[in-house]
Image 1 (tube, rainbow, N blue to C red):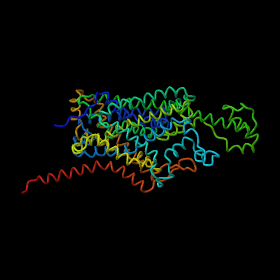
Image 2 (image 1 turned 45 degrees about the vertical axis):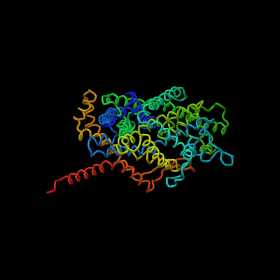
Image 3 (image 1 turned 135 degrees about the vertical axis):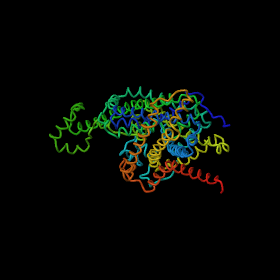
Image 4 (image 1 turned 90 degrees about the horizontal axis):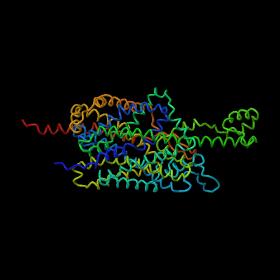
Length: 592
C-alpha cells in the first residue's frame, strides 16, 4: 500500500499556488519591454494567438499528467515509460539551475527594500568624491540610479575575468532570501498552501495602488498613448511572433516540473481543465495590467526627463544670448535656435556642443528589460515622486512577493521528486530534505554575490533554461500523445474528472503545439549559430556606461555545460534504461 499523498486543503489553494508560481517577475519586467519593442497594442495579436494555440494546451497537459500520475516529474514520466525518466530528471536539473540564480533577485529586492526607508533615497543623488569637492566621477558620467545599482549594490567588476571576492552585504541578503523560502516550504503543501494566498494576491494590491498613482502622474498619458498606439507593420515581423510564443511559454513556467508537482497534490476528480484556463488567462491579464502601470510610469519618467532637458537648453540659450526670461518656449525653441545659428554663428558654434537634442519620442523609445527596468528605470521614476520612500517600499515589497511566489514553484519541482523517492524519504524527514536543498542552492548561489556575480547571473538567465525547456516540453507532448497514447490519456481524464476531452485540446496536443515548439527550437538554435561569438554587457566605470565584450573560453564552456547537463539527461537515461533492460533479459535467458 502506498502512503497517503498530501493534498491541497481545497482547489482554490491549488489555483493560488499556480498563479503565485506563474505570475512572476517576467510579467512585470519582460512583457512591457516586448510591447515597447514590437508595436505596442499590435503585439497583443500574436500574444493572444500564442496563448490559445500554445499556452493553454501545454499548461493543461502538464496539470493533467501531474494529477493523473500523482507523482513529481521523475515519477510521472517513469510511469508513462521507463525510458522517459530522463525527462523528469532534466526538469529537476533545470529547476535546480533556476533556483540557484533566481533567489539572487529576491536578495537584491531585500537590499533595495531596506534602503527604501532612508530620506533622501540613496539612489536619488550622487555621493561626494573623496575630497568632498564635487560629485563622484563615475556617478556623474552615469546617473545616480545606475551608480547605486552597479557600484553600491553589485560593486561590479570591469569584466567576467576579474571575479573579486564574495561581498558580505548581498551575501547576507541572499541568506535571508533562502531563509524565507525555507520557512515557506518547510512542511510541504501544508505551509506552502497558506503562503500562496499572500504571494498570489498582494502583488495585485500593490499594482492597483500603483495604477491609481501612475494615472495621476504628469505625463502618464504620453506613456499610455505610446503603449496602446498599434504599429501594425510589426505583425509582419517574425521576431514579434517568436517573442510572443516565448513569453507565453516561459511566463507560465512550462517544463520545470513545478506544475506537475503542484497538480500531483490534487484530488483525482479535480477539474484541471478549468484551472488551466483560469491560470493562463489570469497570467496574461496580469502581464497587460502590469504594462499599463509600467507605461504610465514610463510616461512620467520620459516627460520629466524631456522637460528637464528643455529647461537646461532654455536656460543656456537665455543666459548666453541675453534673451528675455520666458521668451523661449517648447513651441518656438527650434525656430529660435535656427535664428541664433544664422545671426550669431561664431557664438552659437561655441555653445552648440552643450545643447542637447530634447525629444519626448526618443525618451519613450528607450527600451529596457529585466534588472535594468526593475532596479534602474523604476527607481529613476520613484525618486521623482512625492513621498518617494512609500512608493519605493511598496514596489520592492511587490517584487519580493512575485519572486518568492515563483521560488515556491521552483523548489517544489526539486523537492516533490525527492520526497516521492522511497530511498530518500525513508532516511530523511521532509524538513531535512527541504533544508538540504536550500543550503546547497544558497552555497552555490554565493557565486552571484561576487564582483563578477552579475555576469554569471546573466549567463544562467540567458542559457540555463531556454533550449532545455523547449526540448523537455516537446518530448513531454510527444510522450503523452504517441508513447502513452492520446486515446488512453483521454479515457484516463474522462475517468478522473467525468468530462470528455474536446477536439480543440487533442488537435493542439497532437499537432499544433509540438510543431510550434520545434519552430521555436530551430529559431533559437539558428540564432545562436548565426550570432557567432557570444557577447555580454560589461560595466565600464570610466565611461559610466555598458560596453560589449566577448565571453572568455571558460565562460563558453560553462554555457555549453549548462545546456548539455539538462538536455543530455533525456537521451542518456533512455540509453541507460535500454542497456539495463537488455542486460536483465540476457541474465534471465535460459541456459542451453
